[in-house]
Image (cartoon, rainbow, N blue to C red; front, side, top):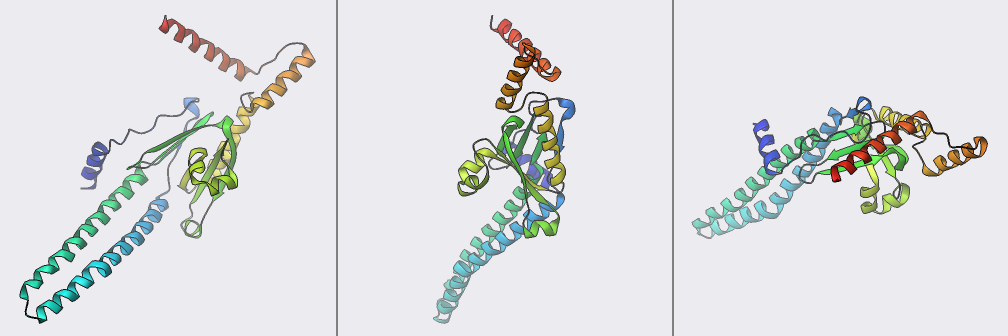
Length: 255
């Protein structure tokens, strides 16, 4: 039944296919997924929200209507019993909405992707609103791990990757800025591994001469002053050759 519902939602909501790897070497691609305990964490949140929703409906609709119905029945108005259909209908709709939200929670867990290559990372999340973010390692400024009490109990954590223009306390005070400049690996059980992988590839990127522009310019000027000419690493030469070949192919296609 759930598989049928999933297929129906994918067609109705036009959920895109699995994300393609971001720019980088395909051989270096690593795919990370949220941990099974993250789904349990989402289930706990769903259960709490559902209990609150049902309680509000019972207290705001069911109880007043039932009390009013008994009062009218005592007054000899037997037709008042039909009024009990109203809270039952409202309660049934509320329960159906909760069940639908449960299926959406499962879909959001399954459709969450974290893809990392040697040059960038791509994160996709959401079902009702699909959010996809691609971050080049050259723009990363900070990598942090956050873990709340419930997450510690479930042995999961979130990895936060801040990029240029976001970061730190400003992103925490301005949620819109955080969404634009912060990438999240939510609900993973290998947060340290992800952080170390990104840091390692950041170092490799900078060592290859493709990191920070200021550092690259400084290294080039030092190389030019010491030897009288420009020197480039093999990785940089390879990237430049690939860029040149792509430019030539684009020029031929336009002509």
